Image 1 (cartoon, rainbow, N blue to C red):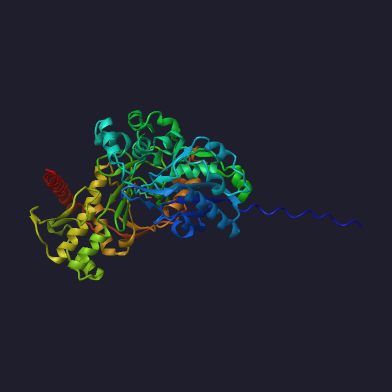
Image 2: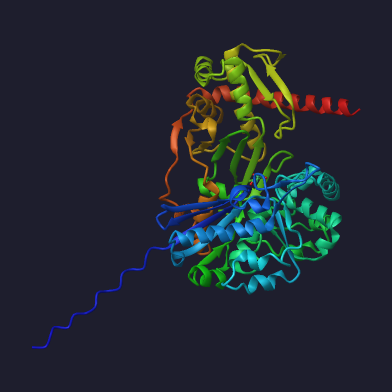
Length: 550
Ligand code: XUL
């Protein structure tokens, strides 16, 4: 009897696809892997100072002898990518499962590709690592200026003068002129190193430079990171003629056209297919700045505000209608091209809270928290602004205390002073956010992160001041996570699927405080008062500055 024919078992289903997010930050290169269900499956990193010690960086940078110029070796970033991918390969990571990748980079830093570099980039051989192939004749400037650089003050003044003032520049580009912003760095390079500048065929941001490595071709600058250059018109999302003209002739040719942050730039280059086993269908989604990527990683939505309570306090905002100002930055939004985001940096954060804790609460967070519990919301009108070091937002220094009648006073009782500090800090965060166009809407959430976000009394004040619930969130990997989320979203963005539809199942932040019912009344009163007081603080500082320069 003939044996019954047994059909072979069906082939196993292909393993589920993966999405990679890279973060080229100041001190390290990180990678994070998610699957389609948003589970984080793998993370790894390369620390620049310790793992690439040949480059002799401290904190990932070189601080030059003028103390103002701060750069990072561009080849260190290249070598870090070799090392990171080799680590993943050794750990058995299956690159063929990666359907899309994206990334972020420290904002504002710039990379200068030498004439002819695009050919090298197009023809990388899988037999050698990137560092071996890019180390000669590929970069016209080996030391890339980074965000910590503050050596371009003159170029900032010139740019503002050329466009009609600081506020006009902010209205066009989202920020007044800042030394670290790329346009001013490019202008300085053109003036101080004309040969290197002449030899440049393309200028990338750190983010678009990293994307170019994966693409094997020059990657476009995305709208969101492009907003940190003092060159992009944030409303038309094209290079601003007047800013380009004031910075360098024909600069648009060196920058290439900017693209939406959700764009698919193309497939990963054949170098990665042959060297690491990436699939030819793996897509590279535009890379963006680390702050925009963090906004994506937090899944910040319209009305939300994220407050990072660290050494300095950083505030991220989702903004629908921007009103750029002299303080803070407005960037194009990385996940919704019709929206904006803003970034505010407050230098006097945790260190000031610690000083007041030491002086008014005997060095104990317990006693500090008890002071907040024992004093009423609104602090009977007592308020303080504590700028122990020169503040960024607003540019002011000194300590200013006001009593319930808005009179400046030299001291407050210990418990009152604790509340005066915390309410003063958060009211100032809110005030500056609102002056950039932020508005609290029904459903607004405050997402708190950083060291002080484990203190429930501080978070209660935050909730009362914003009259919104406060949630805590871990931000340590938010840029990388945001990059992986953006890789996933990039594949469907063009067909109109929103970022939030793709990320519905992502873990939710945890609710930790809800506003007290009387918060709105207290705030209306304090809010009006604080605007006036804060103006007085600014005026006082200006007068003092003028006197000292007389
Ligand atoms: C933002 C800024 C920094 C860098 C840090 O304007 O300069 O946050 O992006 O990586």
